[in-house]
Length: 305
Image (cartoon, rainbow, N blue to C red; front, side, top):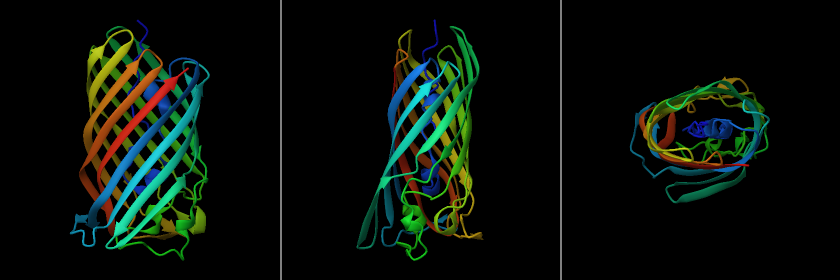
């Protein structure tokens, strides 16, 4: 039996921080397993609710009800040249609404597009056992509006900075990642990590390099030659330092967070792949005064030609 089950990795759109939202990509090559020559298209969505206030890493009363509702939809298209190599283009569409006391606002528009290449480094498949190892690398381009980074643009609220609301970074950034998938009968384990290398962008603002990771164990509820349905315990996290402005560190942009939640994965033949999941923070430590995520909801759909 040719292994038609996808790797079930939700590529890079699991980041909790706003800065990471700007560089995040959904890696359909990992989600699809990268098997087979041809085109693929799809859409991925992440909704994040930010309304937990932290001051120097400690939760504090959210006086004034500071919040951000962030929706990032990624439309992507790619082409696999072979079973092992492919490319993918991602176009993010961002919508954020936010509030503090009686104030309300919103930002909407295109984010920073990215172009990534993926490689399947190792692929061992039998009826009972599977192991695959993938890698990706790419570039994020400064296509999203970075007007919020203008130093004349004031922070919206004590815990919501202009850098939290910008649609783009104004910088060219590098993206590196790797992932694996291992299966034994109906049990499987997947994992992946990505690292974003940030450069100075608009108005001298430079988002800090960030590291994200995700994965966990799962079990196939349905597994046959054409379909699969699995439930996975999904653990994810990120770590990033302080952003800088013309080389001077800020004091309210670093974050380290760990999330836990369920994910459901479905495949049909080698054509359709779908995932839906939710993330709940189990540990969040930030610097300065920030509103941090209370929960996230994710979904993705990929179709291969």
